[in-house]
Image (cartoon, rainbow, N blue to C red):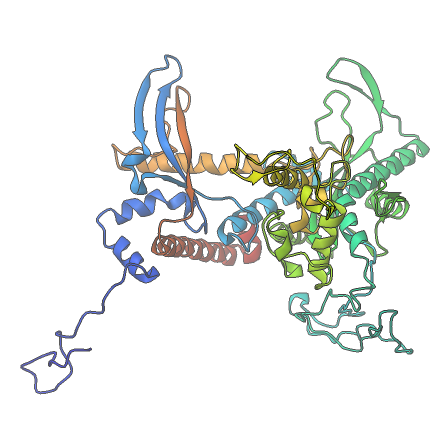
Length: 593
């Protein structure tokens, strides 16, 4: 009940003054725990301690000891234990690339992906700037049709900005004979779907759609891309032979001399899951030459090779490559794997004057590097025998049927049937042994083998990866059922296309380390976990163990996320100011940071 005392007793007016009741603070709420944390004397020290993981939704906590050792003598110069640190742990960011899991770490991953992809087109980060003169194209390879789905098609754009496209779409599937499919579902759709319509990507008839073929295509899409790249390189090698360009003699690591084609592809690609759950690839393909004495060097291709040759090579490879998967008990002849009819290949310009520029392509691909199955409406971690029933349903919606197809096709075909799935004989079986207790799980049974332990071993066998050369090539479908069968990394590149994510991370750590050195010089006597007394003579040796995931309280998460958001706003304001002074696009500066 609120106080009824006059807030200023000597004033003639009632209800104003300083004697009102104080609002209670409850530490079990986010605001209350944040208030308690911020009122502690060590608040600013804690905020500096969690700076490296601020903004991360589920940071990793490490506990243990850090030793500063002199490399020449092995003498321990300093020792610190996490018990003397705030929260008795070291916080490190989770590093997850998915924006739905951790927006802060995904933002860092996206900026690194932008730098990695753009460096392969214009140089920098250790890549020679001469790559800007190499022929390069932006290619999109789509999946074939596995059934009719709701779509939004615009044949001719009249809008000025594709991001805010308000053009009128064509009817979804307009047909003169509005009949029914064999399952009694309408085979026509006259709707003009909006961009955010929930039915986009959903089949017109779930029973007509080939869910098995789609998940198998997702599984073997990486092999299809690999064969397409090889076919394009063979086409370019034949073109060089027809033009009289000789092969290049290179010396291998073993000292032998071998002749190789004078050109090679250096690609970088990103996988995207469409709303229907089928994967397609957006790729950057750059044409390089071969150095005779240094095969790892990046040099221009021989004179005469143009962007048109690269476009023709990729189109020829996409139309030519097709194969059948290995036999499966459900389909002994296998499934055909090939690209769809929509293959788009466009030249990339690095001077900012063309339709497709280097910054545009790098930003476009970096955007998809932080996404996964969100477009299909499904998000989950790796599925097991205990959790598969929550997502798979052979009579459910589109995504549930895709997951069911992954689990059904990926079942073990070379192992005995689990005891729970074996047919039982209703008649008594005299072969039972006396009841006994399993020493592992304590189950009382009369079987010769414990049914609980056998089922657990079978469930583990169902989800473990299998070697395609010796085992079941479809076993990975169960391991990647939560990804609808696609088990590859969403961003891959050629070895010589650009730098690695590890190099970018190491550079960022080195920058922060020197930044902390400068701060330590201003405040003598402080030592942080990332500091080195002398990088040439000392070494930090850590014996850290996993202590947990996440913040201790919701208030800590609120304070850390707020501090990280304020820092991002300051950085964004600074980039916008720099963009205003230089007359460039601030969006590009944000991505390039």
